[in-house]
Length: 243
Image 1 (cartoon, rainbow, N blue to C red):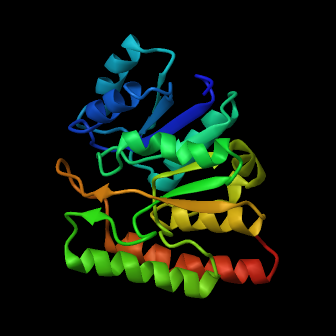
Image 2: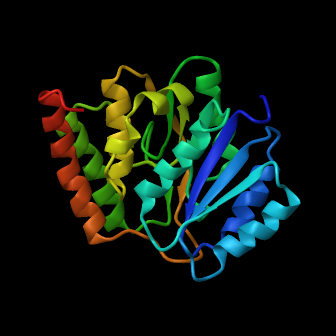
């Protein structure tokens, strides 16, 4: 793998307890992934910690500081734009809380490199449920959200809200990022759906998702409500030819 072709985008807000370990594990991979931390003004000093690590690895670690908490979706859009302004051919997403195992990154990239897929999703539900340390209520919510989304959109993806994934550059170039307006977990649904409707190949690879042990989850009722309405919006806009 060419050292400058894959960028891993990691949004952060108050992840000082986790981000150092995430970065270390990525840097230790045999493949030379580059990474971009998009920090939303974390008051716990996350960005300062990343900056210190960046000073030691200036070619591989990149940092985008934003003022204030602007949301997951806009953080990823900023990361995508950063990648498209540079020669990256693959752009991965992952969380900063160690719920996604950095050692799985090569498995996300491989189907793209072998031209088997254009979007690869690290799936918690393909071939069984692989989630550690979630309460049953949250597992049921997540699983039924997938059924709900597939029923309305016809999107053939089991883990519709997965945040561990990799895009071929062409996909991000084809999607009008200005018109992507989701900002919670529905951002993942919107990106999957728009890629699928444009004819790109989506595939899922099984991963184990481990709930964070440090810091607090960003899940909220508002995020759930946004996702519930977003699937209807996407379906209707698709039927009207407005995607």
